[in-house]
Length: 412
Image 1 (tube, one colour):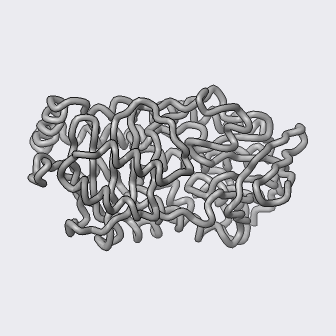
Image 2 (tube, helix red, strand yellow; image 1 turned 90 degrees about the vertical axis):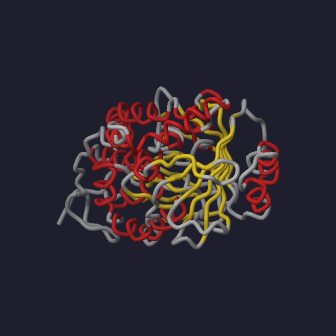
Image 3 (cartoon, one colour; image 1 turned 180 degrees about the vertical axis):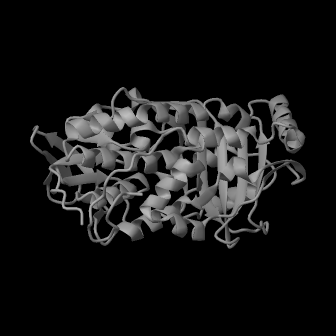
């Protein structure tokens, strides 16, 4: 049995119960830390788009977590994505591995799996949020919207693109968030086209609308992407966000009118900018950032979820290897992740102009390229290049403890 002494700085608050937060909590618990997760939502978030994992590094990390088989059972098993004109006629198709990677799952299903694997040994505080962080050098006093203040040894911001912890610790997001000129909306709708593990997309200048089947074809996800200068809106005002999408796609053909009508009653509507986060450092004192809060690569990269979960593995492992010394652990976490993050973010650069062409000529040109793709010798280079980027990190074997809720021995 592993008899390593309990690490110092063991009492750790994680803000965010999406993907990165529960993944980190899993590993912290395995290493003998005591994680607490606070989440603004009243429960585990459902909905969201499909996310994918690519290559050996991603699959090895999932296997070491013990959730690879669970994800395989819930995988989308998506086939090719087909581009259509405004009348639904096929123009071109993209191979499944370009969009879906090696293993694809709905973000809501992934979140549920992570919650189920951690809830018995991690304290979850839902319907609450951090309002103040006071780091006196020996600990962190955290104030919440609803709960009484508490003192933690360390604080982790795993709370996404618009990170509350980042704002409280580093300052306004305007200094770190780089918008890429696109906005995205996604929600669940009926699979009224009878899609069978497949998806359809239609582009017009500056806009892309898509629909793909989900959860064994019992439902579908509708996605809207559109180009726009930076918008000002209330991120908590869902109705205002729906109006933005409706106005942007007014007059667009294909399934847009019906999907816009169904959007009005969608319960899991999500809307945000397509952005990246760039920071010189991810830690300050006893606080550190993880995942999209620190280094959002954007959905265009196809790397965001895998990157966040790899980051969780590395952060927990380096803290454990340092015996809980946050100064050493945080520095080694950044050292191990910097080059990998840079490559993943680069993978998202320039994708927007292909995904959402800005002119009729570019729409035609993109569709012609997709139409010819299955017949050209280099047809596998896109997926191969993305997989190479996803694999551009060597995962250390961090020794894990024998603790309830997780196997002992190494973290393999």
